[in-house]
Image (tube, rainbow, N blue to C red):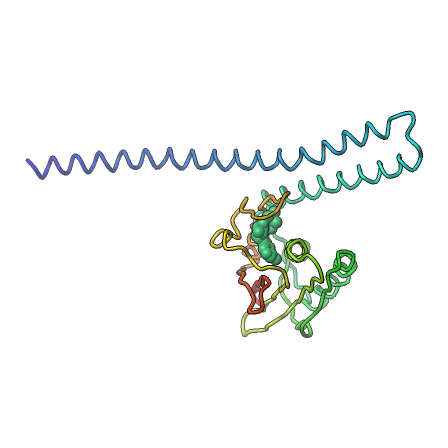
Length: 248
Ligand code: ADP
């Protein structure tokens, strides 16, 4: 009798657990959606407020042409900010759905990216340097999406480095994969981010952080069959690395 009683109790516990688990999963999902919505609303509010105020300023009859010109510039900048945010959100929700990989010469790809990034980084007092030549290898890449990985990592590094920033690209070719390292000389990754760096919405120390950038990078790299990780360098600063499989 004691045995069957125990069996009944444990069966009930299992049923309860399963039911409870489903509820927890559902609640978790809703919490994620809520968090998602909150972060979007939060990030949209600020630029929209600025646009609204600046539009008022523009429309004033006493506004001089120079006031109008600067108002227009400000509105444009905020529209760009919203565009970037929307692009991030789209990347985040679409990542993994369509990955169009074609054979690409990695050296040519990186050199083109470097040419695109360098002036933008210089404008923010960040020096971009290559620690060595980019390996001339062919890889199956979705160049457009992989470009996003570089842009996100460079943007994070630039935000982390306050002055005299140096961004270093390093490459190691192994037997079956190529490792790309992006190192900065900022303060390094905060201990608060340990274990959740690549999780969506995990952000620390930023006024306008969405916490999506690195999770997008992770998805894109994993869609390429690769891995991404990060560490702080021996001399401080953060080092983000990703491995991509070589073609063939
Ligand atoms: P966001 O930049 O919107 O916060 P990310 O997913 O791109 O979202 O980054 C998550 C967090 O990781 C950042 O808020 C920051 O605390 C940390 N981080 C990312 N890159 C660096 C870096 N190069 N140096 C120091 N911390 C970084």
